[in-house]
Length: 126
Ligand code: 5GP
Image 1 (spheres, helix red, strand yellow):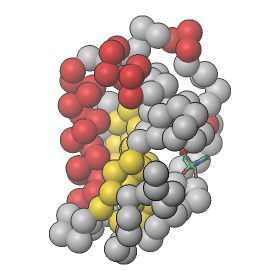
Image 2 (image 1 turned 135 degrees about the vertical axis):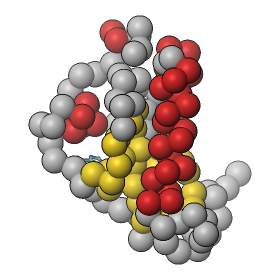
Image 3 (image 1 turned 30 degrees about the vertical axis):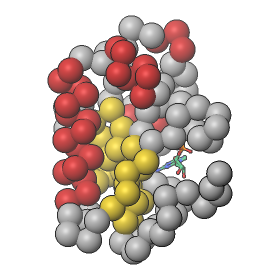
Image 4 (image 1 turned 120 degrees about the horizontal axis):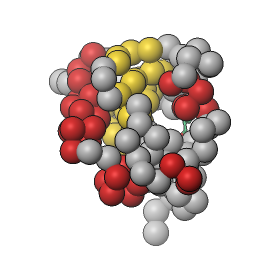
């Protein structure tokens, strides 16, 4: 678990989903992670994978999570892509961090996009 709890907002939407206060369409769950469908999908497949621990960002996670939680989250991402049928066709993994990336929810999450050819990585280039 994070030792940076002061920076973590216990009322962020994913914290509330983890506590069962808000429903989600669950795709996968294990000891350390939860995957569920994004409420506003931006591709035919748009699934979110989050750690169950209280981590704001990749920096928080990398610095504070036990190795077992880091390994479990990465394995969950690959597993969820397979569950969603994307193993052969391919997919994109994205994690927004901070203001420039427009991170809306301050709980670390990976987006998994797929189900069609996804086009260029960024719309607005340099
Ligand atoms: P971010 O911009 O922080 O990387 O992405 C946050 C994502 O969370 C967005 O794609 C948004 O649609 C999704 N989201 C926001 N609120 C909810 C919610 O209540 N339920 C679910 N399933 N997804 C949500």
